[in-house]
Length: 406
Image (cartoon, rainbow, N blue to C red):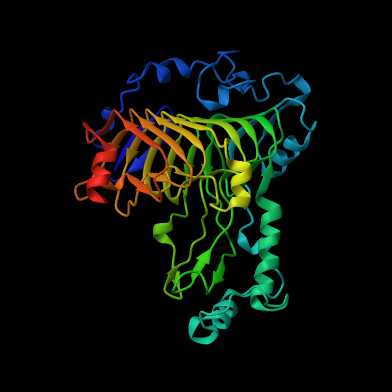
């Protein structure tokens, strides 16, 4: 086993990340200049996003809680303290320092289960050979196994979601600072900073079986690790997003399908705008980052001209897909390192009316995975991909994609 360190984050891996030096942080002048915070360089909790550092620096910029007075600086060690700190002072500037690892599900999934809920009874009631694959479960009454699952899921939803107000900085301090089992909801607000945290993906304790999803049915789960929903000026920096103790590789199968208990690591949706994600680690996940959650025209009205996002100097490793998957957004992806492993599907998902610029990234692909897989296109939305390296050699990603999937 070897340990790879990425600017303060440690990831233990079965093998060293060959070719990691291919990520040259000075490939463009932008990245080298952009990471200098503009204020209070000695106090990380009051640092603000520097000028020209991606889309989150546009316009009013992103300062989070840098202007917080002493009464609105909190140090928290428990989930209850964290949620109380978020609620203190409304949108007044606030700084929340996280010490140690906060567990939003410390009492386990059983704490959310409705009286009478039984998973074995659920499996028996909705097995394909019993229920079939033609009808979903939406009409099931409240006292049915599905009804009890809905009640249980609602209890978890209330417990693990944390609404982040405007003008807030959340920052990990000391060793092992992080939050596990929670969903950070950055929803309908402006000016938020999240830094220096290990964020372990929440598991959905009560996934729903949908017999009509696909030809064989499917398990569907809720809860993204972080959701930027209709919000503006958000900076995510030096965090680790991981499945941690609950990787999909260890999940069981029921009805012949993976019992999926994870959704995304980061969603940027519903008209969100001006987001920068820098120096993060995204690891051990399937559907990683979604920008724009629907092709529907009703959603498009709020997304067109928005969803402007920058990813720079991030490490993407052990992922399956969506790094990122984009609809409508204007997205810059530069100076990142992508390390593919077994099960890799693609990195850049080009969706409806997206505008993706991918430059000066490095890809480490194992033997047998073609560079043609890096891009997956659902349509002919504009795509720029230049000066990218694959296993240390410059590769025209669009050309190899077109050759492999004409």
